[in-house]
Length: 72
Image 1 (cartoon, one colour):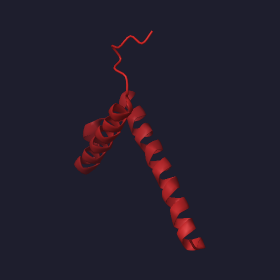
Image 2: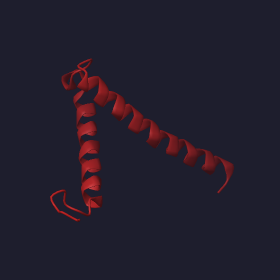
Image 3: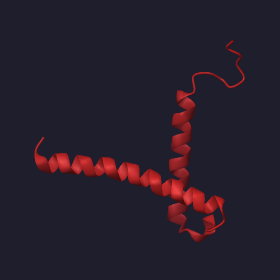
Image 4: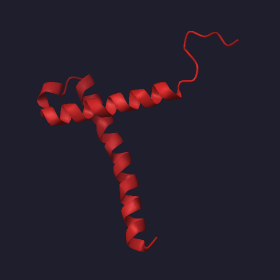
C-alpha cells in the first residue's frame, strides 16, 4: 500500500468515527429539544433511520443471551 492509499484509509477511518459523533450529537439535540426531527431534511431523517436500524440489527445479532434468561 502506498502513502496515498494509506492516507485515504486513515481518512476513511476518521470519517467513520466522525459520523458516529455526528449521530450522537443529533440524538442529544433531539433529546433535549434543541432540534426536532422535522427540522431535518427528509433525506437526512431517512439516512439516520437506516443507520439506527442497521446498528440495532448488529446489536441484536451480537446479543447471544436473552435478557429473560437466568444464567445463575
